[in-house]
Length: 273
Image (tube, rainbow, N blue to C red; front, side):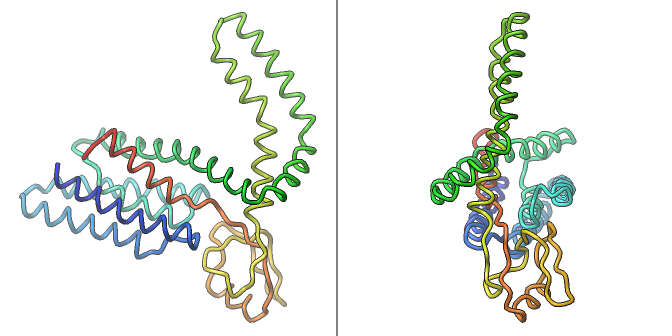
């Protein structure tokens, strides 16, 4: 359907801009997310008038509202940053809704694909970070592993004893994968903490700060306290830090916009417009 292909193309271009912004500045500009939303609404409105098909507009608005609810839920539960949540708004209007069940299929189906590919993408990205900062990562990994080494030994023993017991009962290799996953949980914990401490926490000059940067810990500037929070630094807080000239420790997150691009491409391949 050409009308949906056009909206998919709009979303693809908008997400490309978001990817560039997210990688370069760790921030997705409002003009990118809200332009996509505005173009999708306008296109659905004009197409509905041209074809005299009001449901084309109504179903699109319903999808946008659904994705807004999902986006705000993910934002306030601290799963998504603000730019990622707002990127969902416009995406909610591009899919081929024709019944209420389509909202479940496209809404939660897209989120499932997004998070599934997001896990793979995040793992690959973290490996790239660890390789680029190998010496500091290696040191941090062994420091964190020393804190969980006894848990690692215990998880190995418990998981494999449980596996052999369950395998004898059911003769299923599924339990082997479950046992391996449980066994390596302490290793995953040490790996994630090492990547975070060695690759994602940086001392930053106040002149290089941008709105939304995440503080690693609270900062005290004279009588003022700038609290660490998920919303990140505000413009007023950055001005205060610049006046003081005080450097701060900032935690960089993984730029998640590329996961949106992968999810859209994958979704278009399995559910073509």
